[in-house]
Length: 250
Ligand SMILES: [Zn+2]
Image (cartoon, rainbow, N blue to C red; front, side, top):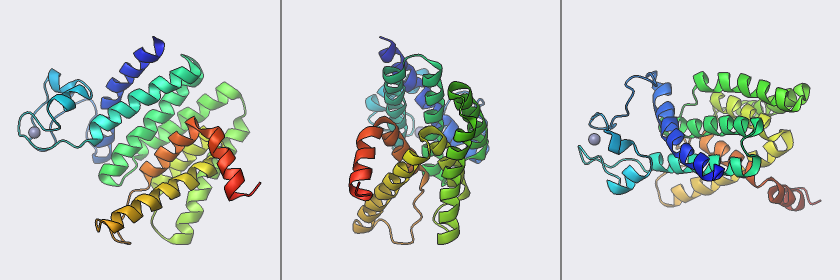
């Protein structure tokens, strides 16, 4: 019952996260206009259009007013948020820990939307999130120094890669991976990073095969980091096993 309620609540929050991810990077207010509008005809959406996922399904993925195709990213983000919220409550219940994880994953989802759409990870979201989540984990587990090490290791890893490769990843990825380090701890953060690179090269290779990308095409890395962190968080044990066995040979 609690899980189902939270999952439905997550669908609604998911559509809010879409709005945050789409508006913050271009400096628009997230409260005014209060209602979402169609990105192509700017028509303000009615109450019917605001029902998560279902409105997309009923309108067959098209705007009711101008008929333009609506990106499937939006309902996917809503479903993802609903699923993640439900899963967190399944594992942690309605606890302070569950609330903290809910906040971290909401931030990761906003990052997916804005990095995918604008190749930008907004500091206005990341910096407050880092401070808030650091204090939250500190209060929850009391290992202030350890959390600081986890956070820094995430940031240092990306910084080193940027310095070594001169490009590819941006400053936003540094803060994003710091948050992931905080969430997972430095060991699992490394696992998550390997997973993100694997996903990135698989999809990059696929796009190149389909001739939709070249070696030079900039592919935002934030969504890979975020999705990999999500997978690592929920499947930590089997992933650690795989990591030790095949990558480290233990
Ligand atoms: Zn429209």
